[in-house]
Image 1: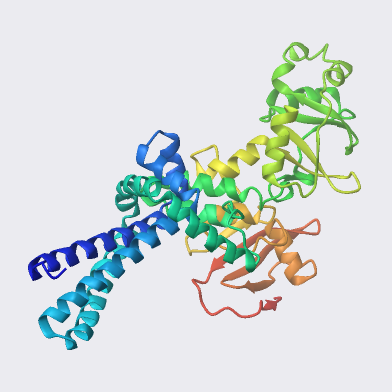
Image 2: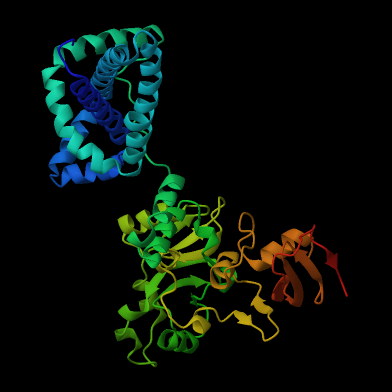
Length: 431
């Protein structure tokens, strides 16, 4: 070193700091890589991604290589800085050189390159992977010894380098990924993906047609009435029963029975019963994502929802589940939501049988959906009795007025959104 000029020493020092910056940025960039994007690129044959994946498959060797190189370079830089300090200021220059080198390494070899690598990991990690692979092969024996010693120390604390956890993304994490995708995923597609993730949280009893609204064919009705229903019914599948829906005989596809509808005079109930298909039953509380798979496996499009006692509670269709993903199949919202009527004064008149999920989706409200499924059920649960017409109550940011009650159920409700006013406990009054 005595024969090397100060200019050359400064050049060597700058080179060592740059090499240190390379190792520091490589470490941060490799650890900051998006593992899912990396796997995608590797499957597509991206050479740099393949190399980076191989390096990350053995993180102990990768870190050992980077830290060995960084430590060696920093020690060499310290020695060069010491020589420069001695030549310039004598023994007092050692302290000055140490302080100056610390600041230089901190700024130029640590903070700046690591920040850049954290912001743009692929730009740093992919080119660096070529260099790291070559260095890994050249220094393999030394790195192997260092890793063996380090892994041995870890075993003393009950940690094994082979026990790496690959935690899959949870549903909430997947939701966050979709929402943060921004313009990469169109807004409509984001909503569909979120709806798919929400299928696990929603059960069939939340979207089913309730028992009292099921339209079916009672074989005890006059044949002329049954014939009229079959010729004018808007539904393609109907349950067939006697006296009560609990005495179900089967399901019939209206479009498959044109020949028995040719002549009203020769219309036969026996023939109608003969072509019925065996009914398909769905347990109450089945998650939608499970029922979607069941419909696909069983080749059914409609199921009758039954409780633990086998009593029919409602009816669910494949279309109902698909609408939870893609939305209503009609663009006419007035047709799709005939029971939701916005008023000129800002209030909304809603049928009590409408589900809370439909109300929230259509009006962008946040009525509670953890308990009852319908607006009628929510009101009865809150009041704990069957109210009279004119009863008013408040639920959070919503003021409700019962307009019509019939057959032990709330038929019509006027709801006014209060716009986030301070909410208190629901107030219950009766005129």
